Length: 164
Image 1 (spheres, rainbow, N blue to C red):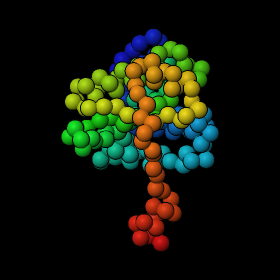
Image 2 (cartoon, rainbow, N blue to C red; image 1 turned 90 degrees about the vertical axis):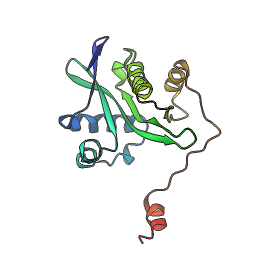
Image 3 (cartoon, rainbow, N blue to C red; image 1 turned 90 degrees about the horizontal axis):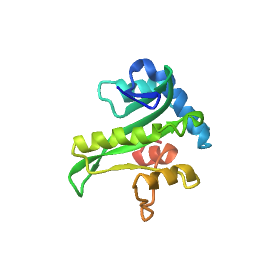
Image 4 (cartoon, rainbow, N blue to C red; image 1 turned 30 degrees about the horizontal axis):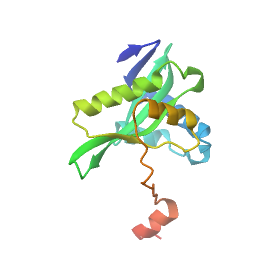
């Protein structure tokens, strides 16, 4: 656990599942994607706390209440032969922005990446999210505009898998 500027960072526990889902839905609403936020508490329980955790969560708390979270997992670079950290979601409630929570999340993950000999941290940002892009520029990240994100999901994923 780490306390700074009136908030605390800590790893999430199974008891935090309702707050994790609330914050995921808050982020989805902010990104105008609430219709895509269909994950259930059971889904998150398995992903975060099941026998083989696939993803990890750090919570920011202020006055005993979750005000933000960073959800991340390990990826791998075949070119370097080493792992990296992929930040799937970072979210801080609007009324708590400006306290340094986002910076603290990135610092915590960077410390972990360095300690675990990871080669990089990566994440995505929506092109209209100017405040986030400005923050990411300020911390020294670089945009990889030459790469295009591709996604296979839903019916197309099932069709390719041969599950008609």
